[in-house]
Image 1: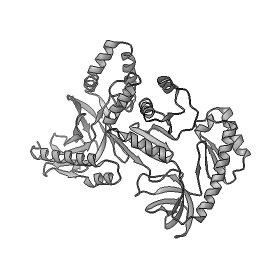
Image 2: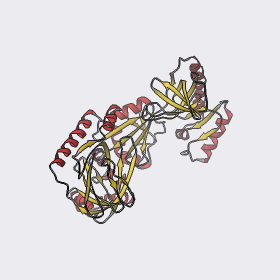
Image 3: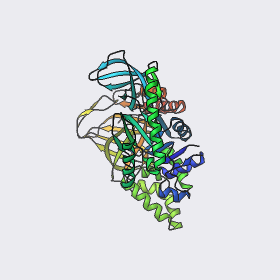
Length: 465
């Protein structure tokens, strides 16, 4: 049974799922303890799950086997996209310097995996390093530091000296106790970093943890010197990012609804801007007070909230499977469809339309058609005089529309057509790369291609006017 700590806007839904998966919930917040009628468990977690900065999914960090298990289980939900760092954070390697670039040495730490290390080291020399910042692609360099790292539930040891405490340890007396303990023990040559779970441990547990961590560091130093480079010396903590498309958020809504009243679209709204989040809280509170109002909200919410958007300026969040979030030029809702909206986006600067390779001029505008039932978003680009320049269709997960923004996960391939050309599919290589790196399934890959091909045939039969 893995121990899991969960934070953020998805906490209730994920806690419900985690319990069903047989996980032990530790260090839960007060609202979660009340909702699930559980006691506070002080044990350190095997993995921690918390919101990504942009709220469109979660970051998962912890013991490799625990993270792997979580990703397997969460990945069974439709609309979930996962990617895991190629090496663990603070894992230790005996590497080989392969080349020097500028003021950095390029070190091979495992066959086909390279990292960059500050400083100049002779090419061919062997060096012990740990992962300071992992990467999610073998095509990118891992960031390294020299020496070994030890990761334990209560404490982390890193080369050099000093003492650091987690920002989550706020009790002045506990901070004083941890500082005193670290100063009193002989861990020369290493920086002691007390982790957040240390605030729940007693002095005996902490001193034993620090002692074992230091002994482990000395063992790793010896093991590294005797290793045949490139070689892995010790594990660190796995890091993964999980993106939730609209389908996944609906499933999380269902999981949350089993615990307390939840409106449809709860997680889509809560992951959007402040207005959407506040409106969600208000509607759920009102629905809890009146049964008739609850029924009305459940029956009418989607169509009502979309109808209220007419004339409103909303932002657009274009999320790539690499985790990058691109904020497009916002637009004004000029029309409301049965299951979506049309936005008008006006451009103020010169440029070139991506994929269309035609000039973008000040005053040009885009009529962006967004339908929550479709696996694509349509852009129709016009000159300031109203002449259609071209059509760009982005294949994506079904879009989400909130009070603040429109968002979707881009599936790489696009369909384009100008007035002077036949429609065609572009960016197929990017989709191929996502499949190669296991960011999408073969089934979704084929679905994206099929949708793109259908749109090409549809555009062939239409006149651009």
